[in-house]
Every structure is written in structure tokens, then in C-alpha cells.
Length: 107
Image 1 (tube, rainbow, N blue to C red):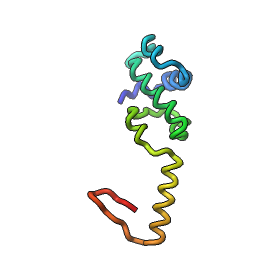
Image 2: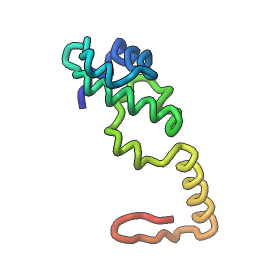
Image 3: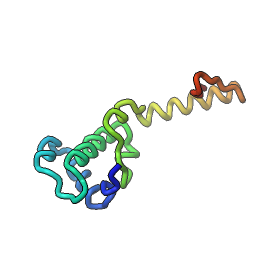
């Protein structure tokens, strides 16, 4: 994880180039010391994906996004809230009854 990505001017660059052609940005190269154009492209692509799937992350400042595969497998905020409410309802119906399967907690 390159913490230089958290610098304010880098975060502004990522946000300002959210709709840019990432391939062109990679070919142009990075204008930031200690940050590759590939790292910038990954952050721009991930932030763009987060706009629909994880709006809180998109709107938050100073986030280093995980690799694309992690975002692909992440539930959206809407789905996560639904699942959390579903678990809360089940817990209310069956207090103190949790089911374990191979070290994974299911409600």
C-alpha cells in the first residue's frame, strides 16, 4: 500500500480524472514522485466503481482503494444494510442462537 496516494494533491488528481481515459493516463505517466501511473489508474478505476456500489467510500476523503477483484466481490452498501437488518431480525426471533460452520458465523 503506497501511502503517498493519500496526499491531498493526489486525491484531487484522482477525483478530477474520474472520467478520464485511464489508458491515456497510464501512457502519459505519473506527475507524482513515488506514485506510478499504474497505481493512479487503479485508484481512479476503483473510485469510479465505488461511486455506484459504495457511495460512502466514493465521497470519503483519503481512501486507498483495494484491488479491482476485491471491489468486484464486495456487496453494495444497499445489500449490506439489507443483510444486517435480516440478521438483526433473525437474532431478535432467536435470542442467543448463532450457528457456526467452519469458523464462519451465520445468522
